[in-house]
Image 1 (cartoon, helix red, strand yellow):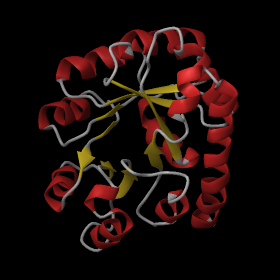
Image 2 (tube, helix red, strand yellow):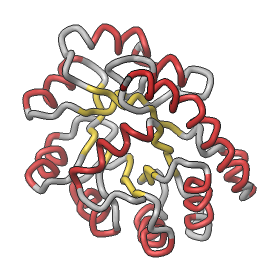
Image 3 (cartoon, helix red, strand yellow):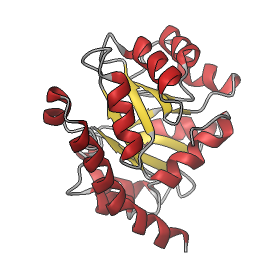
Image 4 (cartoon, one colour):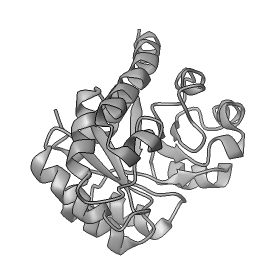
Length: 221
């Protein structure tokens, strides 16, 4: 069931525990890729601006695969942010803490996960009343060790680590009490996407959910 209200997005992502990063190589693959995510039990797509097909791809998914919740990723400008929402995205993810985009999103009740990497980034979010942020690039900035350290001064903050997160370290990340979900391209293997092997994408999503689901359940017990 796709998210319909802005206040539902972050709890929904926390429930799923996995946010697939999607970079479209063509407009034609948007719908079958989205169908594969839904079939794999991860009906959400962070469609990134790393591709020129981002906006049109989101429009196509929104129209033809309504069960998949769209989030715009790698959002660098305010124009991109606004265009994403118009295209059907329910929230935004930025690679850095871009104050102009963050403040616009907060003023307009648009869920946003700004990129943070160091305490000063996290504090900018905290001072604005935000409690959910992205941690990027996770592995390059110390990964699990850094997230554990951030939990001390920022115990109320919850993170979406991306960048170097994979099936191999997924359990370690999602097991942290200050991690609400993990993100990355691992639910959409590049080799499978390249040849249109959507069954393999669906299976990768199932594999990811199989790892995170019991850990999330134990954290919420």
